[in-house]
Length: 245
Image (cartoon, rainbow, N blue to C red; front, side, top):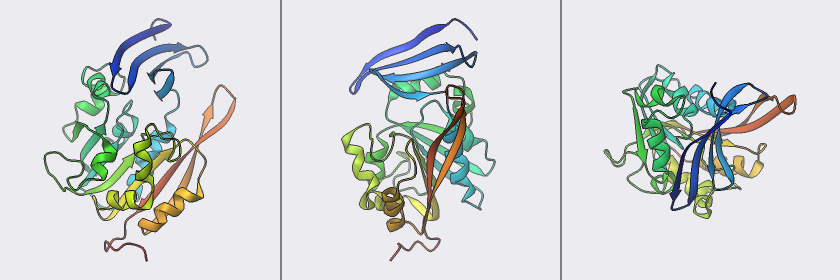
């Protein structure tokens, strides 16, 4: 722990002012790292259980080894770090739209930065995840058209509360079909959401993938002295590569 508050970095970006701050939380008596876009909180190290479970639940659906994984939204690195803790993972591409966030990791301004950037299996890619998902070239600029065993996404608040209107099409069946084209047969798509399970989201996933399930991830909230929850959706492509009828 250090001083009570520190603004580590502040930048103007095309989507607004972004800042990285560290504050000493009086309840937890621990440092909390937060990223804000203008007055809106984008990321926080305060509650990370669901970000970690996004990786665990997604990779649990894969029985194989030598896994190639994409994380959409690098953020503070909790999902990426958990992916790399799985010894079956051969490679990780973390796609992040904000170059400033990638720079914070490379400058080791975040607690988990070294565990992500120093791992030889890991590569940080600056790009628009949603545009890449909808393209033929996909997520690896060095190997256009490359397929992956898992794609794990934590970018928008929910499929209905997106950070930019252009993201909304991704969560519809046609957008999900484009994403599924970048997965190997039997590949997994997992998605974090701040809302309770949504039947419309599950239905859209089921229209594209062979299976789709919503997992409620609960965690202790020290501010309410109770439980809070996020949702992780996990969908799996048919092992034979066929789309649902």
